[in-house]
Image (cartoon, rainbow, N blue to C red):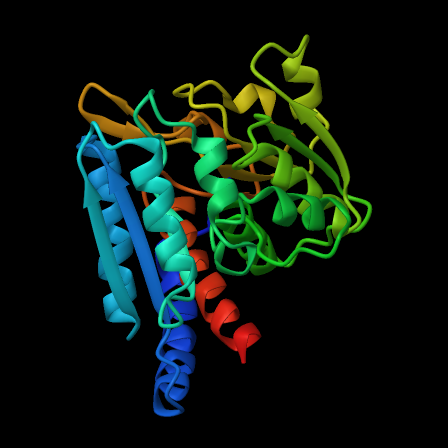
Amino acid sequence: MSAQIISGTELAASIRETIATRAAELTTLGHKPGLAVVLVGDDPASRVYVRNKVSACEKAGFKSVMYEMPENTSQDALVGLVQQLNADPSIHGILVQLPLPKHLDSHVVIETISAAKDVDGFHISNAGLLMTGKPLFRPCTPYGVMKMLELTGIELRGAEAVVIGASNIVGKPQAMLLLQQGATVTLCNSKTKDLKSHCQRADILVVAVGRPNMITGDMIKPGAVVIDVGINRVDGKLCGDVDFDSAKEVAGWITPVPGGVGPMTITMLLQNTIEAVERSL
C-alpha cells in the first residue's frame, strides 16, 4: 500500500494565504513587512533560491529588497551593509544567502545580524533560545517540517524520531523542535554505525544529509512518517536523500522531492518575517 503524500506545495499555498492577509492588515496600519536579502557572488543555485524568496515576498505583499554584491566583496563591506539594514526600521528581516565566498566568515556575518531580524534563525542567541525551548525564530526548514508533521496528525509525544544529518541549519534544530514536542530523538549522521537499525525504529524519519537515494524502503519502519529534506540532482533530475519509489511502498506518509519540504522552507521565512513585524510592535 502506497504512502500518503505530504504535499509541501499545497500546504505552503494555504499558509501563504494567511500570511498575505496578515501582511495586508499590518500594511494598513503602516507597518508593511520588509525583508532584505543579500546575495554575494554569482552561485547559480543561490541565485535561484534568492529569486524564489524575493518572488514569494512580493506575492505575499511584503516589501522585498535584494542586495547583490560582487564575489570579491570584503568582509567589512558586507558587515557594513548588514549594520545598515539593522538600523533600517522598514526592514524587519535580514537574510544573507549561504554559502558565502570562501574568503568571507559566515559566522561573523550571521552574528552581525540583529537577533530581532534574524529570520533565518541562525544567530547564536536564537540558537541558544531554541536549545532552552523558548525560540525567538525557528530555522525555516525545521519549522516547515514541524508544520508538515502537524498535517499528518501523528502524536509526537512519545514517538521515536530519528534525524539523519546534524547540521546547524537543519539536523540540530530539527532535533530540538522534536524534543520540545515530547518525541524521543536520535540524531544520526552519514557515518553512524548500523544506520539501518536506527531508521527501522523510527516512527518519524527526517533525512537531511545531501546524499541521493541514501535511504531505501528496507530501512523504513512500516507506516512511518518520512520527511525528505535532501535536494540532489542526478542525471539532470532532482531527487531527495530517500529513494522515493521503494520508500513509498513502506511508509505511511512521505514527502516528495521536489514539491515537499522546499516550498515550506520559503513559506516559514515569510512566517518568521511576519512574526518579526508583530513582535516589533
